[in-house]
Length: 84
Image 1 (cartoon, rainbow, N blue to C red):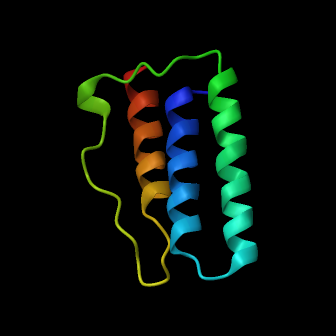
Image 2 (cartoon, helix red, strand yellow):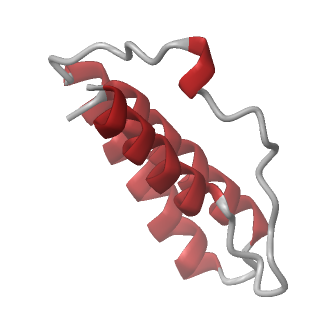
Image 3 (cartoon, rainbow, N blue to C red):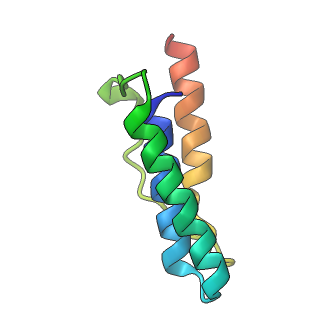
């Protein structure tokens, strides 16, 4: 998998962990962040996004505390597929 995608998912999981009030949900998000981190370190494909493909839009949280990082990750994936 692409390292940039894995790192963006790790970041989204950390944001979600910081925003949740439920301790079990926090542990789940932190566990996922750790797994994404390990996968990113082991990823064969380095992050090769050109600057024009990197979103500079800050991550926003909706009313439920869910990060728009997932949507940003989808958009970045579409940009990579279109460029590649």
